[in-house]
Length: 111
Image (cartoon, rainbow, N blue to C red; front, side):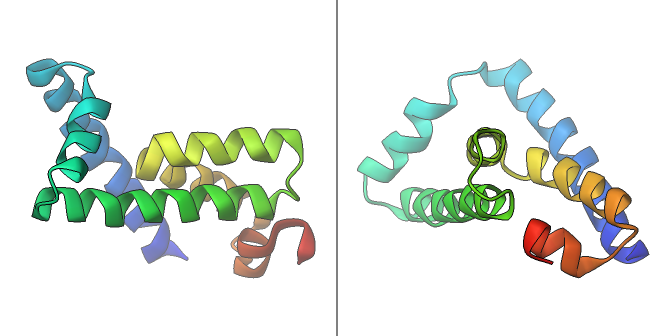
């Protein structure tokens, strides 16, 4: 689990740094650009659509893992809008709470 934790920490630090610079240079106006690229039907839009599907899958998994309870649904929404920033923190917390048991991390209450 140590290499996986290191990967998650690295992703978290890199994304926080990159996002900070992006917000400083371009502001918070992501959604019109994100969906505008999709509407243009070019490669940036294709990448955004593919990425958005991963975000939806992440949110669905987080919600499923928590048994679709209200708190789990809320975390699922955070997963969709927070992306890897959310997921890296979420997985680090789960790894800590589970003692590194990947079955408990992946399956939640079903483990």
